[in-house]
Length: 297
Image 1 (cartoon, rainbow, N blue to C red):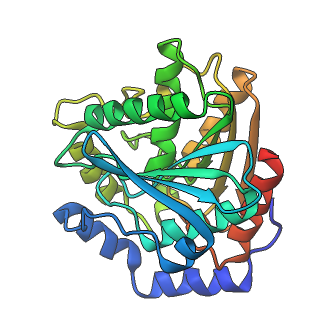
Image 2 (image 1 turned 180 degrees about the vertical axis):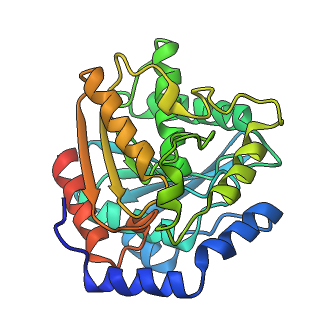
């Protein structure tokens, strides 16, 4: 746990609060005005690594491989965006820093998004992609990693693999994970007042689109893995901030893992806001990457 918030993070938090960023995001979520096209890998990343793109079920996947010192670890990185926003430049910058600190090969998919697609399409896509990754890298260590919605998806897909008696990843790493699309945790109200990134109203609109219909059970573990079975899963690592709207569910996940004696690394960063880890210029993000490097090695 970091003991004090950095000056940089204090400035970022106050700036996001001043411009009322969470309300800006809420409006875009309610109207679904996000660009569905993924941001592409930037020059800085492409200049440092080998970038290979291919298609899976008509969607783009990027395989990012270090030019030197390649490790035996494969990371499947699932981006956040409430299942309605695609890859951003900030996600690519995080991937760049992730490869720098781990030397891992990273797969970054443009997975299906709502409302054009629903969760069943996303799981079908991931199943196809994971099969391809296993065929190519069967002897290597595999890590699922995701921020926000991507974190929830990573954990939900891991539970699905376990239910189907398929090979699990060796590790699941979650950043500010969206684990409960029903948003029913009673602590959310008090945390919403602190968060400068998200609102419950906006997330509810996104959840409904991803679920596919108004009668869908948002507590279905494939949508909300916090309600899933946690027996016989792999190691989990959680990064969360205490000013994150979704922090209560990260705390709940810690409790669930303790009940099931599931190996867990839990890192709680005081006063950090939702998805701070993709703000890679922040000292707290750099600290998280150092922890990932140590854990995965």
